[in-house]
Image 1 (cartoon, helix red, strand yellow):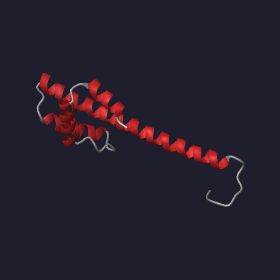
Image 2: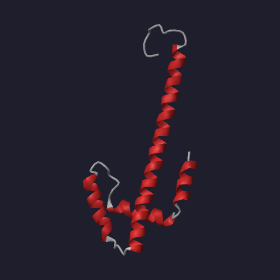
Image 3: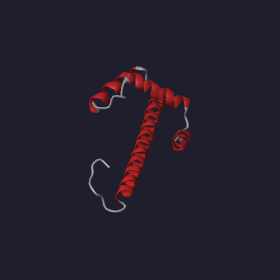
Image 4: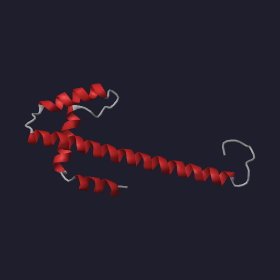
Length: 108
């Protein structure tokens, strides 16, 4: 403990168990957020790729998307033209969403 107080019986063990539980929950939350971000990036990349193929969108649309989304979400730093190209490439290399989603679920 941090100081010389007398604690009730079982308190130190309970405190240690809570710390362990909190750390485990924080780790699970981080994994969940990271998985969601990867899936979001895949969906963005897939959407760009799909529209470029089916609607004939050119490469300039990526610059436009980057600018518009940075304006709407100024605190999100991953919405750059370069990152959108990475997202598109990611979706192109891994075209099966179910596979991407399943793979993420298996990652430690």
